[in-house]
Length: 369
Image 1 (tube, rainbow, N blue to C red):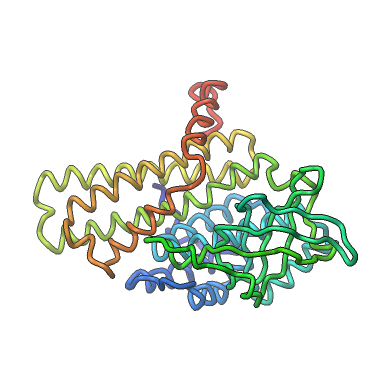
Image 2: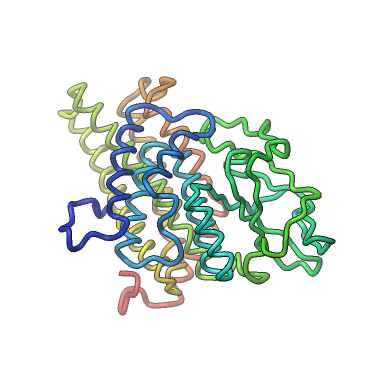
C-alpha cells in the first residue's frame, strides 16, 4: 500500500489537495463512531462542503487520481455506506462529463455548484427498463433495484433499453420523489446506510436533453470495466481501518507480545499493503484510459477481496467475542465490508484477469508496473 498522504510542497499541490485534507479530517472524526444505519445525509452534506462533490470529474491526471484514491480510501475507512454513495456520485459525474454534450456538461456543473448529488443505477428487476418516444420527450417503463440512495439523491443516471434492445443512459431528476421509492426489501446486516431500495420509473417522461451519449456508451470499454477501481479503493480503506483497529486492540490488551498474534497480524499487514499497491496502479491505468487497465482492475478486484476476507477472519480470531459486539467499529466494518465485497461476477473478473496475463507477456515488457 503506497501512502499518498504525505505533505507536499506548496508548489506541488494539486487543485484537489485541500479537498483531500478536509476529507481526511472529517473521516478521522467519523471513524470515532459508527455511521448511521439510515442514509448518511449529514455526512454527505459535509463532503459537499469540502468540495468533494464538485471535484474529480472526467478523466483525471495523475495527481488528481492520487487525490481521489486517498479520498475514496479515507471515506471507506470511516463509513463504507458513505463511500459507496460517494463512489457512485463520482461515477455518474464522470459519465456525464465523458459522454454528454457541452450543454449537458454545463448543466452538470451548475448542479454540482448547487451541491446536488448523483448516483448510477443499472440493476433492474424483470422485465427491465425500457425507453420509448412520446409526446414531450421519452417515456420510461420499469424500475431499478439496488438503487443506492433512492429517495435521497438528486439525480440518477440510469440505463434503459430502446425498442431495438440497445442500452441508453438517461439522467433523471429524482429529487423529492420519495413516493416512487420502496426500500422495504433492503433488510441487510451491512451497508444499511446506502438505502439501496427499489425506484419505480414507470410512466415517467423525460425531455430529450436527459439522454446522455449514444446507445452502448454506458458499457463502452475501458471505462466500464476499469471504473471498478473506485470501489476497490473504498473497500481498501475499510480493510486498512480494520487492520488499524486490530492493532489498537493488540496494543491495548498486551497481546502484541504473543508470537502467534504477531504472525497473524503481520500477514494481514502484508496482504493489505499488497492490495494497496494494486489499487494504486489500477487507478492510474484506469483514469488514463489505458486498454490494459481492464485486466489490471479485474485482478485488483480479486486481490482486494482476498485481503478483505483474510483480514476480517484474522481480526475476529485475534479479538474474539469483542469483535462481534453490536456498536463496535470492528463489528460495523466487518458487517459492511462483508456485503460490499459481494460485487457482481467476482469469478468472471478473476477469469478475465488471468486471461489478460495469458494473452500478453506481463512479465517482460510489463505495462502494468
